[in-house]
Image (cartoon, rainbow, N blue to C red):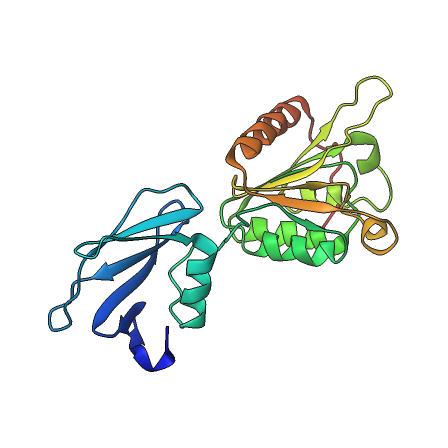
Length: 244
């Protein structure tokens, strides 16, 4: 597409050689490109098919041209041209994303854009920054629930009791015999799954070799949500929450 062929871009509407194209996002998060019929401009109508989540098929009437637009490519075109479609505050990755360092900053970013709920099952939570982010999310109306290992939560540096004192719903998970509650996962907005080896601790951030995965697979989110509900219902509140 030659730059000289672009006449103007306004309100997510791209005018190219007397044809008008509109960029918009579907309810399921896919990007849709529509060719519009605009009085005074003309052009054929483009129909967007109900294609698989990563592909859009566009049929140009009168020309018999069939093209497949990958969602990422279409979004890239939209961004380059300045046509950014309206999206939700959270744009979860379409494919798994893994982090091996700088994990705390990634977690903070995800917590900051969460709008409805955070469910966290964590073995150990000693990071003041992550604890403060959870408390802040709760203060802005996000439903925050935490399940933690009962023995780890009693340790001096644990932030679990402070979270309970700040109004976060906390449950201490009973271990099986001498076992521990060793989960490390979070569900953000019941859409994004965060899991991996990373405990929410200073040691994990600064000393350990760790990993964290971000996934937006609906089936996996549902399975983890079922486990979380089981852990939460079986847990008990802290007996003496710390004063915030």
